[in-house]
Image 1 (cartoon, rainbow, N blue to C red):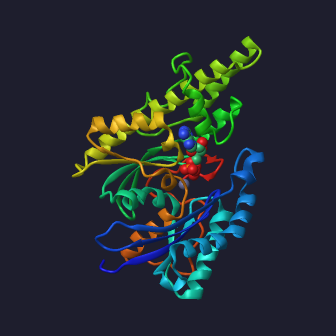
Image 2: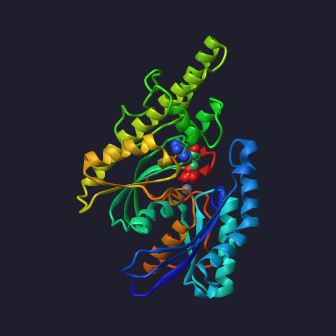
Image 3: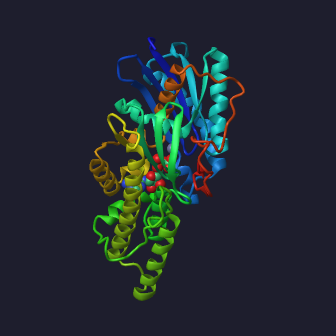
Length: 365
Ligand code: KG4
Ligand code: ZN
């Protein structure tokens, strides 16, 4: 581990097309030389969710442009790289294939090694890119497509302690916004509306808190909210602004309560390993929510763990995390070859039971 390693990462598993160059000199913090993300929100806006065929086509059109931009911004040519890392799953198969095919082409054309990265490993290893977190740490991945607690013990050693059995919280925020006539993405608009609301006026459930373990459920919460909304509409002939704010506040508080209590349990399981410096890290778009973030921070402090939330641009989908996971994989001596497959489902922890359902952003892993 004496050499500097520079890797190009590609990400196209959902609705963000991304390319990034990351460099690591042993003994120094990693450097993100460039991180280009081209979103597709506009393309899918009219459909109320990500349309896989549209996403795949957009990735194919934009990936090589993102790569050119990432290389130019990093001030590097292909021959200045040590390897090409690409998200090989889990995700929408058309998008993953677009990335894997481009990465194979680049690897074949340059002779550089190819590294297939699990998208979830990219998220899970981000605290090492941003803060040099030491193994083992506890990670809560909470976004529009994922929700799981991971014990991260090595670059390829993940234990899934629990996760959602239905919707991801971001998905629940998005559906809540839709039910209440607020704009997408729902997370920020529900959070903004909740600021003026009273979280105690409506009693929404805290699903699965009465059961042991770290699994979660968010689809019932949304149904309960729908029931309250319909009662209000019948009574008042529409949804008043105050009532909408109260519903948003109640929903957000319910999600925060569930995540906080399940995090408490996950932290207890993690602390049993007696880590030297306990770290509880979060990633994913929902970790941008201030109420949720504050609740998780409190739980971490009570357990005596450091709370780590990477900058938002590195919490949401990006290719710097894929390049970094590539560096970790490269340093561990792993290499893939032209037989690298694109995998729509690819759980990080093969021993964990398979998840039910398939979210709006593709397969839940
Ligand atoms: O990580 P991300 O950008 O994409 C994936 O899902 O992979 O997360 C997006 C999700 C959306 O569902 C969005 O509504 C949610 O994160 N989100 C939030 C907030 N900002 C984004 N949820 C709650 N509060 C927020 N402030
Ligand atoms: Zn993601």
